[in-house]
Length: 66
Image (cartoon, rainbow, N blue to C red):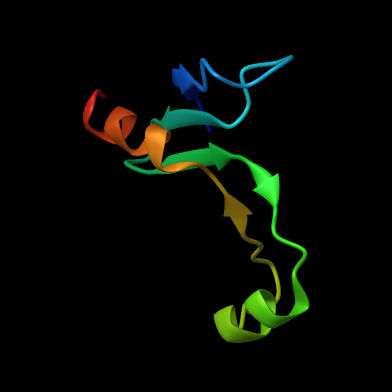
């Protein structure tokens, strides 16, 4: 999988995370804060092999840039 950096969160310190990447497979990789809240995870009902990350609203604008 090839990753192309689209944007790092300019308001995040110290490493511009959350970060958005576009792949060469027609998909996105989102680096964000790990969701650990048990109630939220139960509502998501994530299957094996999947996880959830949280990103701030200010990052949504970058999805249309790639």
